[in-house]
Length: 222
Image: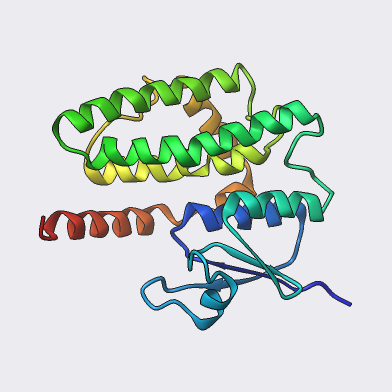
């Protein structure tokens, strides 16, 4: 019996693109379903009734939600081309830094971009410190995964492709090659991988979308 794999996501979400990339790296055929988050489908609400968010992976009728959880599920289910290291300590460290990106870097980056006054100043300093932590973790490697792309490289997609687009839309320069040469070298390395480029939004379309969102936020009543 053929396996049925479906991915519910949106074209602009780094979280659903993570899952798309992991599946493609594993060579797993899947059906992609584009969700309209302003009018969520009954299937999405059925498969993720708790958070009602994308991404959701449905494997043979069984749904899995939350991108970090889905990535681990994919690696445990399809053993070829592993994205997590085999060593337990190294696996733990990868999980730590993945949570660091999603729970710390994402929130700080938002405040650095959209905060005001002192909050923004503090957030920009914190963001720089967090980026330096990640540069230290790369520690001369081509990828966070070592010689090949791995779990943390996939999770870091939002730093590589979403942060630069957002700051261009805002006209700011908090994340630059001069400030973070190690991370920009890593970005150059991952953009040499065809599958990585397949799993990112078209840049001009992405930029136009972000600019429209920012204009909407700025014009909204305070």
